[in-house]
Image 1 (cartoon, rainbow, N blue to C red):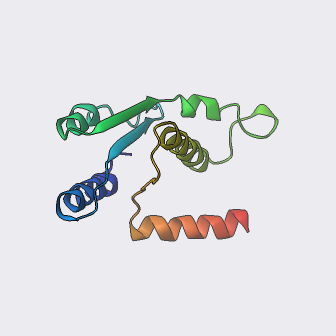
Image 2 (image 1 turned 90 degrees about the horizontal axis):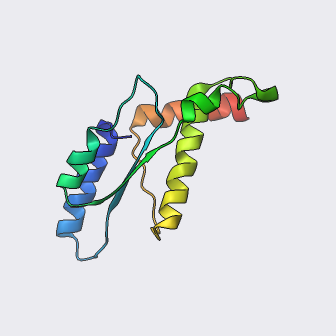
Image 3 (image 1 turned 120 degrees about the vertical axis):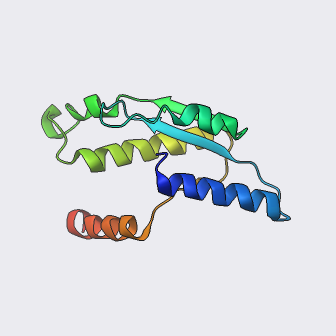
Length: 123
């Protein structure tokens, strides 16, 4: 996403890459869901300044949500829909670019929230 969790993880991975005897490449991917309330485009020059391969993917997830719910209606949870769509895009991008690991950043509050949402909505 380019948030503090993601950028902190990226810098930890860059530090590991410099210090560990294991050699690995890092590629970065950001999914822009094309909503006015979130513009990750300032990340483009920042990530490129780090010398990393960067996949910046614009996908109009938000407008697609208005017709992807039951019966062609708006989805019941935009956040859950967006997260699922972004995750699928990340998996596909990793696969297309022969990346064998996908690393996602979450802090403890995110983990607790994901767990509770799963318990309450998915059984």
